[in-house]
Image (tube, rainbow, N blue to C red; front, top):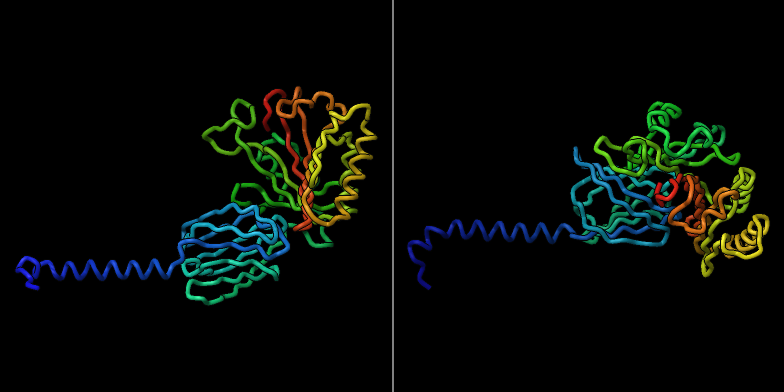
Length: 327
C-alpha cells in the first residue's frame, strides 16, 4: 500500500485518535456500567446517600430483605450512607467506579464490593441508631406534634441539630403508646395555608409522620390498645390473600370490627411471613369514609404496616383534608 503525502501528514492525528479510542474502550470495560445492590441484611434498606467530594447523590431503594436491584453505576469513590429506618450506616471510601455489585450483610455493618475484575472488598460501617439507648427516653411525645404545624415549630421541640434524610425529613425519636419509636417528620409545601400545594419557597409545614419499631405481638397489641383508647377504629385492612373494608360489613359495630381484626392479626403473626397493612380512623367518622378518595371532613389517619421479612412495624400518621383526597 502506498501512503500519500497528505496521509503521512495526518498519520500522527490518526494514531492519537486510535490510542484515545482504545483507552476509552479499556476504561469503559474496567468500569461496570450497571451496579447491582443486594440486601442480605435483616433490615429494610430505604435509601442510599452518596458523597463524592462536593457532589451529593441520592438513590431511593425501599428494598426489603432478600431482594436486589440493578441501577446505573454512578462511578467514583464515595462515602456511602445507608438508611435502614432504624439506623444510619456510613461506609467510607467505597470504590463505586470499580464495583459490579454492592452486597449489604448478612452481618449488619458489613458491605461487600464485588469489582469488575472479580475481586471482593469488604467495608465496615459507622452505625448511628435512630433509637435512644435503653436508659434514655424519647426526644418528645407524639401528642406534641400534628400534621400541618410549621417546621420551625417542629424543630424547636427537638435536639439542636437532629439528622435529616435525603427527603429533608427530620430524624428523631418520639414517644407513643408507652414506647419509644424511631421517627421521621416529613415536611410538605403549602400555599395560602393549604398543605400539599407546591410553592417556590420550599417545604414549610409538617405533612406527615412515620414511626418505626421492631414488630412483635406485644408491641402491636399495645399500639392498637392505645389507638382504640383514643377513639380510633379499624377502617381497612390488607393481609396476604385477604382485603377487608370494615365500613362495608353489614350488621357489625366497632367492637365486632376489633374482634375480627384481632383474629386475622393473630393468624398473620403466627404465620410469620408476608406483609399486612391496617388503616385506622376515628370511629365517629367511619360512616363518612365510605369514599376513601374523598373524605367528607378533615381527618387524621393511622396506617400500620406489619412486615415479617424485616420484623418492622411502621406507623404512618397523616392528616387528610375534606373533599380533597390529599394530605
